[in-house]
Amino acid sequence: MRFRKTLLICGLLFISGLTFVAHERNRYNVISHEELLTIREKLKVLSPQEKQDLTFFIDQVISFDQYPYTLVGYKPMSVSNIIVEDTEDLLPFCQEAFKRPRHQKMMRGYLVWEKYQSFFPRKKHILIDYSFMGKGRKEIALICPKLCMATIQEHLGDFQEILGRSCTREGVFEILTQPEHHDFYTLIDHTRLMGILLGFGRNNACLYEQYQGGISRCFTEPQRSGESPLHMFNHEWPWPGALLSPDFACDPTTEETRQLKKHYKKARRVVRWTYFLRNNLEVTLALLVQS
Image 1 (cartoon, rainbow, N blue to C red):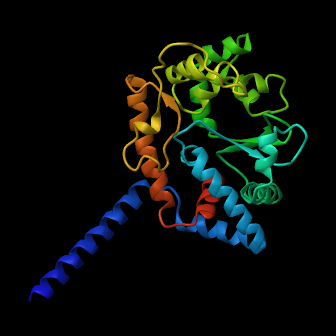
Image 2 (tube, one colour; image 1 turned 180 degrees about the vertical axis):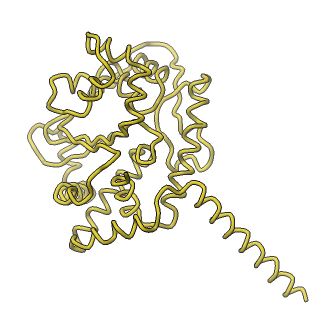
Image 3 (spheres, one colour; image 1 turned 135 degrees about the vertical axis):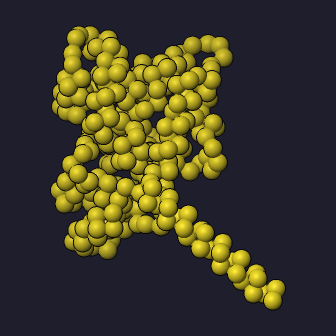
């Protein structure tokens, strides 16, 4: 009798768990099974080694640079630095790092992506890469145009100040997405502007520029003496904090940061349930090509 009762309770708990999972998946998931099947079919042209290298490359991007928040439309932009070739311009520690298996595999995955990216045309995202912080390093930027344009419009004065002229949000967006434009690096290397575009909040971006970053992203020396009000956002993040934490410096006492917590908490649910028990490579590519 006791065994039956225990079995019944376990069964009810199991059913409740499945119901909860189904409810949360239906509520937050933004990728259909049909979209994943389309990507799976396209990936068949890759060799097993190419697929393995590309998977590693995508996994590293997902794990460390918050791209999923941009993929699901909650973050205007995400960036990631990678070493793609060993050149004399690389700093000694970068040259040593490049020789390690992880960076070699990362480079191979990047080359696979370069080879096959035309198989996965973007419809609502822009993915660009450009030389940054040395000829052997590249930065990969993922942009959500709709959210990026709205962010630029909201803070247009900051962009006009740094560019030194009056301009529209469309003009700023054109510069941001054209690495060959003569003003591209004026934007992409500016600490405050990139903090705004990366979804960290204007006040937080300004504080980081004043206390830790300086004007250029290439140099990160403390700019102001005294106690900084900045803390890492992931220290304020609910458990499990290490999982998909939007890792940036913030003032935790401001309304801006409180609103960002709510914003990214919702975004994390979307990301987690979209990727839940699925292949990271397939999901990421499906999000990239979504219309």
